[in-house]
Length: 145
Image 1 (cartoon, rainbow, N blue to C red):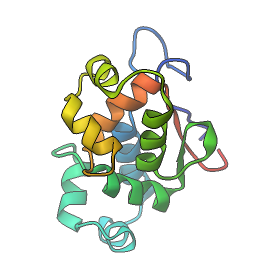
Image 2 (cartoon, rainbow, N blue to C red):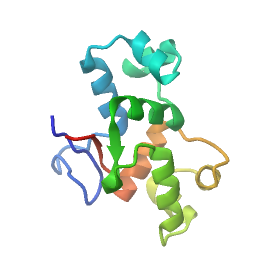
Image 3 (cartoon, helix red, strand yellow):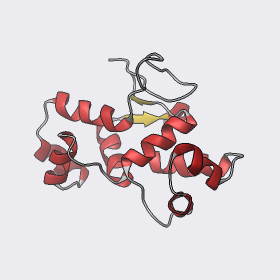
Image 4 (cartoon, helix red, strand yellow):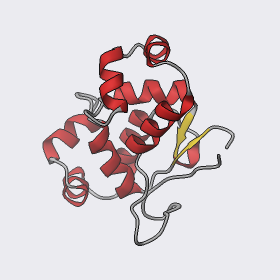
């Protein structure tokens, strides 16, 4: 398929359309893959009903659960080939010159929640992680594609 999605500095579709987020990318893969939701849920440890609601666009997922889907589908993030978006975002937050408060403001997130996430004290919802990916220009692609 050769898809490569990302934010600023990465492959963008055009100025008229937004970059495809990891949320949209995962939903497309789940719905197009042809495997049963039961099998995907069993292999990833996710609740089948939550996975079904996510695939239908009725709810989001916690980032740690999205990481399990990324591992299952062979999705990597950024130029590092990192499978865990949680790890990549935490490391990126630690290495960035801007403060967590500045990043939160630019990405439209709550500073206290982002600080707790960066310190490993809490998870994050995937739709919030999509905002950070856009801010940092982190792209997502299937391994070997």
